[in-house]
Amino acid sequence: MENQWPPTLAMALLALALLGTALLWITASPAWAGTFKCRGPDGHIGYQETPCPADSDSAELNPSTVPPSGAKAHRPSQPYTVEGQLKALESAQRRARKAREKASAVPSQTQAKNGDYDAARCAKHRAETARWRREVRNGYRDKDEREQETEMLKHHEALVERHCPPER
Image (cartoon, one colour):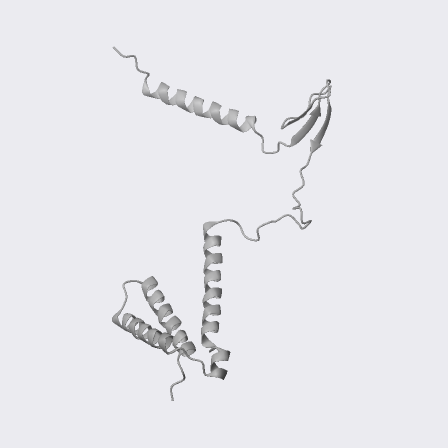
C-alpha cells in the first residue's frame, strides 16, 4: 500500500518549498551587487561580486560604459518593445517607398538628352506593365497582395518611362 500525503499538507509543503526557493534566489544575487578587486595576503588578485574580507586590500570597480570612440554610452531613445520595433520598421518602409517613388518619377536625364532608348527593354517592360495592370484589375486576395501588385505596376511603369521613347 502506497503512503500518500493529505492534499492540504501537500499544498502547504509545496508553498513552503516555493517560498524558500524564492527567498534563497532573491538573497543570493542582489541587484545592487558590484565588482570588487581583492588582493590577498599572498599578493594574489581576485575579482568577486561580494565585498572583500577586512584583512585584504580592496577596491570597488565601476566599469566604464564609454565606447572606444569616446562618445557617450549608447542609450536607446525608445524601449526595445515589439510595438516600438514595429513602428520603426513601418517608418523605415515608408521612407524607402517615398524614395523609390521619387526616383521612379524622374526619368533618366542622360536618355532624355541623347535619345538612347533600348527597344528590347522597352518591349519587355511594356508587356510587364500590361500584365501587372491585369493583375491589379482582376482583384486580390488580401491587402498585402494588392500592395505588392500596385508596387510592381508602378515599378514597371517607371521602367517603361526610362527605356521607351516618349509617345507623340
